Image 1 (cartoon, rainbow, N blue to C red):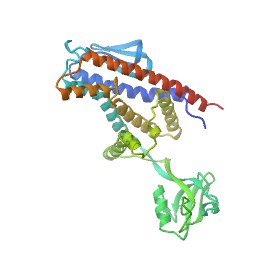
Image 2: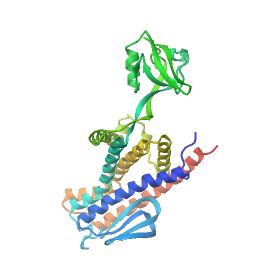
Image 3: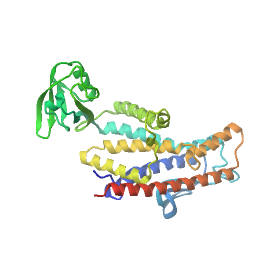
Image 4: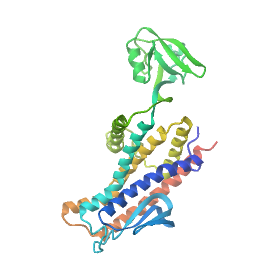
Length: 362
């Protein structure tokens, strides 16, 4: 199996359809909040300079496309000079805090909206698929194969692995009838449920997993879609924002915190888009967008110079001290941080192009 490549049509399209709107929404949050605060916005740019073209103008704001496609920016008047009327630096700390936080908050809001949309458009039902069969086990003797879908156990329909395990637990020491579906059609097989199976094998000697069933799509009304989407939003937000704590506690491997560059994100977006087109459901691609939107919000809130979180940290220090730090010195810190992050993005992109190119080889 080859890894997805951003240089393929799917990878390029996935990059444009996923990262493009997410960056736009993020910067739009900064733009609208700044204008609400009365701060003049000089430029709204997608990508980083050098500038490629001026798309248009909204009042005093230039709308531009730029050459380095790693992100976007909003250039506010007087970011480091509080003496300039209508400047960002001249605003009270709470307005500056809101302007800085508006980008990540827009990404969080977008993720929530996308998850609600997923339930409105429809989610695939679940089905139980056989992933592996232990040699010599009752499942192997019954002829079960990897890829079989278990439809029912003793006539009871099953959709999740928990259903199969619960029904098998109730029938230990007995032979059960599984209705399965495979390429040749539907058939029934008899499998003995061992009361004391060898460690790690399970009662029937089969490894199963719950997987989406795209032949059965469940659609929900607006009210239920909001409830289900909000519940899923809460779960995913807790997972994304709680990841560092889980790594520190040893609950997940440290490599989960390894940063991903735009090349890999674009390639994975293309893979999710391709899979969604193949099954005729936007579920996978929209779920990917929601997750990446939350990841962008989380990353931008990290207290790293040049990121929104780093700028917010300076504002919070000012709020606690009762007086602000020298804006020009702060600007130097953020410039150094920006150069570091840009270098990191270039390094990650070069590395990921190499990794994905090797994965796409013969």
